[in-house]
Length: 374
Image (cartoon, rainbow, N blue to C red; front, side, top):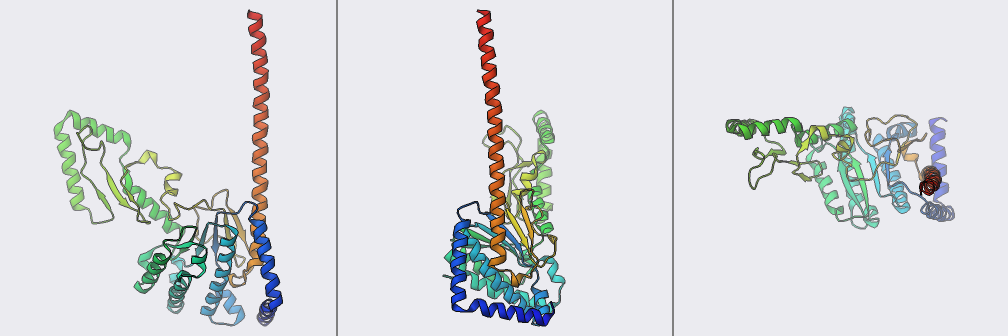
């Protein structure tokens, strides 16, 4: 379709949907569908790659910033559907670290939009407050200017008491940066391997001068290392009275959580990395949706998109993505999850029946054998 035809089609659709009778019928139908969806399984964590704002603006011959504004309007409608349906966590890819490579004009415009929209979202009585959702900003704070940081802090402060749902705004973010931050947090917590530490402690018990050397080395390393969020307590020889048996390290992670547990390198696992991601306290990612027809994740939620995550690529631009695109996806997810749960239940029943029959046979044979012996 040509750009002029696209604009005409969009205008016609918006005009038609804004007619009072059509709008009333549409709302009633939405409520009925959402009510039906709530009777079955609902994804607890949904993520969106909101792609296509710029292309939509070019196709519609409007300013790029206007395309982003229309994208925000689409987001507000989708968030309302999510929270009405019972989704607990929504994660949106608002701004990639790679987007700083765009023109300064567009980057500045996006930052201005972010300030305005964060303020609108977090205002008392608005969307997030109605549904008890708090804003969390996931990303590299040091890359944005102070005005945007102030807007971020205000938004998180105003919604921090909401506890029914979460809106994760990835801004500025890439999954590689998130995983790197997680690894840095883990390294800050990691102790020498258990066998190596036990060897040092054994030597320290046998030779007091080794203990002194350990203390001296620890003091030197603390004095020489630059200041950071990670601090080390004095190394303590195992068995000392009223002291821990291993050096303690305090770490403040991205979410501001204090950790004082020491971590052995042998204990690091996939779960360890998961627990240090920005989304550590969120439910697993159930559904990831990307608009614009592009079929890639673009460095978004790479770790979280596991084997149980449904990924949907939708062939429309984000400003065009509406409830009639979204509800069928939710319905399809619910049907697949019901089918999966039914298969799991049948498999469990088959296992139970097999085990039950085997046990009955074993009991009969055991009984017959005992009778023969007597």
